[in-house]
Image (cartoon, rainbow, N blue to C red; front, side, top):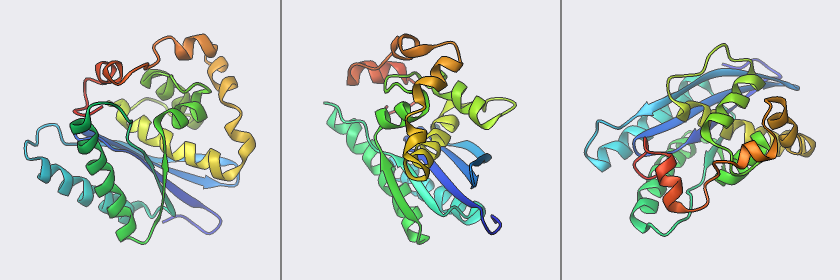
Amino acid sequence: MPQAGKYRIMGIDPGTNYTGYGVLEVEGRRLRSVVLGAIDLHRMEDPYAKLRYIFERVGALADEYAPREVALESPFFGENVQSMLKLGRAQGVAMAAALSRGLQVFEYAPTRIKQSITGRGAATKEQVAAIVQRMLQLTELPPRLDATDGMAVALCHYFATASPLLAAMGDERVKGLGGGKKAASRRGSGSWEKFLREHPDREVK
C-alpha cells in the first residue's frame, strides 16, 4: 500500500494475446516503477475465457497494488472491424475491472501515449521501452515489451495530469537517446495493416 503523500497509477495496454500493465508510484516529482508485466493469454483459445481472465487479473492487480487511478490505451481505429471489436472488448473488461474497485479510469490514444513518452506519435515499441527504462532507471527490460507499453500508459497519464509542461518534454527524451524526430518516426505506423505487421505478437494489434 502506498504511504501518505504517495499515490499510484496503473497503466494498461489491452490485447487479446498479451495485456501489458505497469504500476507507477508518484511522490512529488519522484517516479518509481512498482511492478510491470504482461498478462499472458496467447495459449487460451476461448475468446470469452480470455476476457474473463483479463477481468480477474486486472482486478487482482488493483487489489494488490492499490492504484488511485487507472489509465488505459484506447483502441486503434482501423478498417478491420472484427479486430477492433476484439480489442474493444479487451479494453472494456479491463476498464470494468477497475471500475468495479471504485477506481477512476482514463483513456489515451496510442499516438498520444507515444507522443508523451518520446515526442513522436509514430515511435516504435523499442523506442518507447528504451525511454521508459531510462526515465524510471530500470536495470533491465521485461521479457515482453507489452509491459513497458503498459507503464508508458501510466506515465502518459502522469504527464497529462501532474504538469502540462512535462508533456512538452517529449522531443528532448528522444534526443537524449540519440534519436531525434527522424529516428522516432522512421518505422512509424502509417496504416492499420502496417500496425498489425509491426505487432505480430498481438492478435488484434
